[in-house]
Every structure is written in structure tokens, then in C-alpha cells.
Image (cartoon, one colour):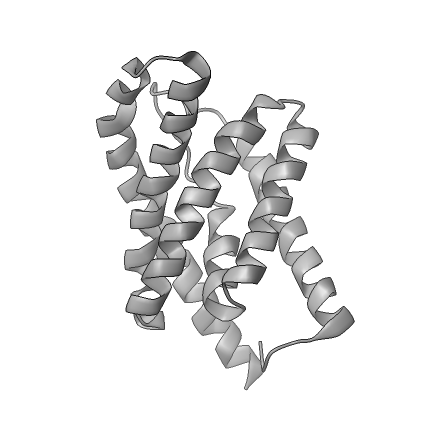
Length: 170
């Protein structure tokens, strides 16, 4: 965006970005699974979260992420997804906050895979707490591979989105 948007414009922008992320999340939830490993998906809605983190900042990214996670759990009719998505989302957001300070805009594609790994870790930790067993951690190696691949894709997409929107705004 051309500069920091304030007031009603900012709220409108955040609402639109949340709606976009939620729509992508719901569409992806309707797709057939990519692998036989439960829970593996591209995480395309994270493109929006990464975009907001790097363009608007951590606070706004947390607002969009929280809105998407909460509304996604309601609209999908699966309230348990709230626990898993929130755990993964918050851990991923924390990592994004740290990496945002270390890496420039040209390196967003590196940030996203790391955040995706921590998203999966957060979900597994939530599952371990809910199920009261650490055996779910056996999925971690598979989820790390999936997170790196999906994270690279979403990171490249977010970086391209930011680059294209900067061109449009000039």
C-alpha cells in the first residue's frame, strides 16, 4: 500500500484481507487431501498473513490471522480446528515477528517455510495436549517436509504479491 492507512480505511483494509484469507482457507478446506498424511495442505491463506506481516506489521497480521482462525472454525463447523489453528498460528506468528526483523523483503520466501514448520509444530503440541500423548510427534518429520515445500510456495507467492502491488501503487 502507498503508505500507512489509518482509521476507517485501515479497518476496511484489514477486514478485506481477513475476508480474502478466510475465503482461501475455506476453498482449500474443500480440496482433496494432497497426501495420505493427515493435515497436510498448502496453507494458501498464509500468503495473506505473510503479506500483512511485511506490509502492515505484526499487530495487523495478528488481527487478520485471529479473524481467519476464529471465523474459519465457525464456518467450517469444526470447533476443534480453533485449538489447532490457533496454536499453530500463534507460534508461526511469533516466528514471523522474529524473522521480519532479520530478513529483508527480498527474503520473504525464506521466512515462510520456517513459519510453516512452527505452525505444524504448534498444531502437534496442541494435539499432544488434547490427546494427552506425545505419539502424535511421530508425524513431525513428514510435516516438516510438507511445511518446507508449502512454505516455499506461499513465501514466493507472498513475495511476488508484495512486489506486484508495489508496482501498481506507483
